[in-house]
Image (cartoon, rainbow, N blue to C red; front, side, top):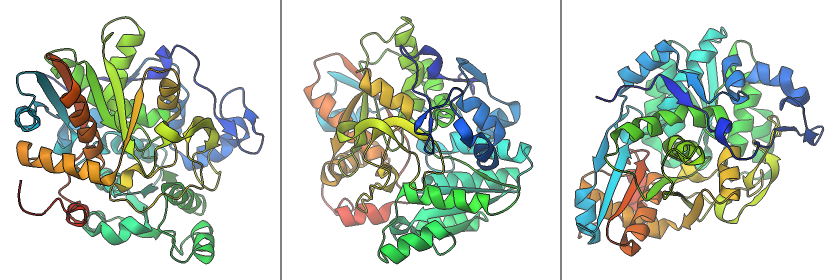
Length: 429
């Protein structure tokens, strides 16, 4: 029987070339220890143990036992399922086998709790009484709200303004759990007020929401910022998904697929397998596919360069595929995919050709979501439906005997607004 892993996997230890160091935006050159002159500021912003994990070169990081126990309480390990109904709906039954790891089984409805729990736990160890963060569609904000309630801390969430208006169910859920939720840009921070002065109709962006959350943390005592994606430590926490999947998969897949916003669920699902491939221990034939939104195609059309993790340049610069820190994507329904960049390690793997990227429109994704929901009885989150779309394209072109595994990173039961607007909720087949 599969149990919660005892360790997280850190892919930095196995990368074929060194991961480019973070850069201080004031110096514009790589610092020897990767922190630069920002070390004092980062210590005030992030949980101290998270900083240690961000820069470690160790392959395996022990999961603290209180975190493992919280994982169990939250429903880990999550199931790996065969999508036989989906195979029949695609007309590939008997020719292609499709499996999916179902992270929607967690109480947040998504994979986000996998890193929210350790980060809030680390903040508590530092003596914090409050954590602050950003959120797009609300999956990450909800995860932080649940983790904070479990561990006895207060949560403050800056939610992109377009999602604050459209994702009412998640906002109410966060508030029910005790979190304070602000629309971003907000009147709470100077960064938010400045953005509203420049554009009163600003729909919000994750880069701006990050800046607001960090400004809020720095404006008070015993507060810590918790990050939803992009940071290497966050992707490392998410490898509980892929480590479980390695034990659950009955056969080695030809493709492993996940959607990409900042990269946490893609990294979490695929990194343990990519690590085995890099070490020559298996998965030699497996292709790793990142599915992203055509509205924010950072891996498909972004530039590989140093750029800010946040709009305000409080955090260090990272070398990554980016559309630019000031990029404001349209208010798409898959709000969790609206980030401007991708995690440095995922960007490097893309650069090296070890990860492929495919971008899809809302209409293409909606068609795949409808097909999956009506054949498997599970409504995918709009973000996760991008992975479903990629699986559709791969399966229909694949030769006999192809095996596909993908991460269904969340359910869409709180995204009915999106599906109504896209016409997925209509009648018919």
